[in-house]
Length: 434
Image (cartoon, rainbow, N blue to C red):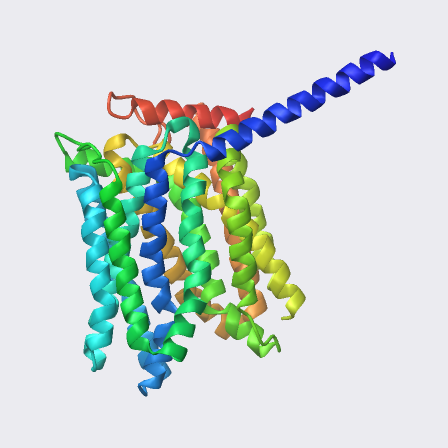
């Protein structure tokens, strides 16, 4: 009897070791092209985020009022959807490698415009230029990674790739303020330009991606948006949640006596960096929805915590829980949008992914500002916390209906062009409904 128990324990130990070995192997067997793409993304995002927090300080030193500063910074997001759409078409029609190089070099011009400008109008132009070129760079490099991510490890690859922009998001803003205030803003602008140039030069190490669509048809290409409805809905919800944390959380916490609301974002970034590789592996193994649904629950809880009175406990707890949600959601959603689109629509998938996120972020910042004026911050956070729960309900109903009605927008009619993504998507659905 004891021998059987001992043998059983040894067998379980060996099985767990095998699972861990397979897990580590998936993380360490990242293709070289993904490493170089991730390095390029790191420097491209560094260029943008070096200026993100430093520019308001710079404009304040120049004597601009808060309303004027808000207009300059907000101009960066004014017409980003044009860059997303144009980049999506170019990437899917002619390939994204050369477009990453061009957008990276154009991104390098934006800090120089800021450095050489002395009027409000030129600062607006520089901000729009920076927003457009950064949107183009982000869409193109995400599409490139999506084109080179193996289908069976797509979640793992997207999770790994996502770490590098988050590293830039965590390190660049405080570094930018430090350089600008201590060493001078001209040097900061030069660093930002150099970082964007490095991002473009790193792309020369990448192999040329084939022209995805030899016979490009815009009407067929646009039909791919139908299959992006579900992952796009999840991404919109994430954008809405993040929008209120950026726009309203700092003010809410400062009014409640919390002197450093930035700790929320610090907790969030650390959670993202630690958990993002794991989330990609889990979505590959158990299916996209198996990761997305619990993550949306975490997002609802993380935002709902903010409805309690402002304090460091509320701030840190919310930051950790919401950070877990973000770290798990992003790779799964990215992998999902590439699962349900063909190789000719990677740019479209990346463009939709970024567009709906910006729409959610901008829409929540505008719409829930009205809720604050009427009902206060606590009510607003409760309403925002309901958004992920509503999305969960929609997804579950959609999955149930798609199981009964074959040939819907969820699973379109089988064609030669979309056979691979549809077959993959059916596998995902089966995994999540077992």
